[in-house]
Image (cartoon, rainbow, N blue to C red; front, side, top):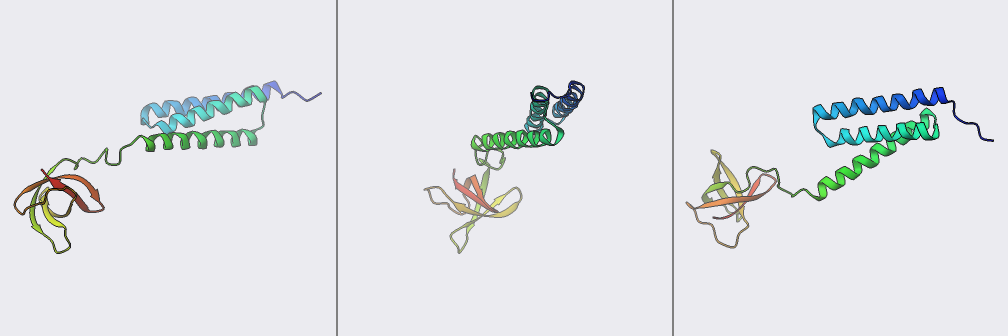
Length: 147
């Protein structure tokens, strides 16, 4: 007959895991990142597995790491799949003044008090003295189109 886990040892061990989950959950409320919520869920899952199966500490650590890693991967994958490329770029849609054509086919534009190199991505030709709007970036080169 298999030996049942020591109830006193198991209860205290799962309690520690649940307390850790609660502490991380409260920390999540102050920080506001979803990754801490994933970690709190992983710690709670580890607590449940310790309670139900009486696993020893080294196995519980592996379970916590595996649940945390799987959760963080799932959240990261989900967030990156639903995020537009330039969703937080405040420069998109802002007007620029077109100053002059550059020899490499790009343009020098004036934006936020400084000259910038820009590339025309629209079908309409830019003209010196005209205006355009920012529609993206390639490194430090602004991607613009005629307004």
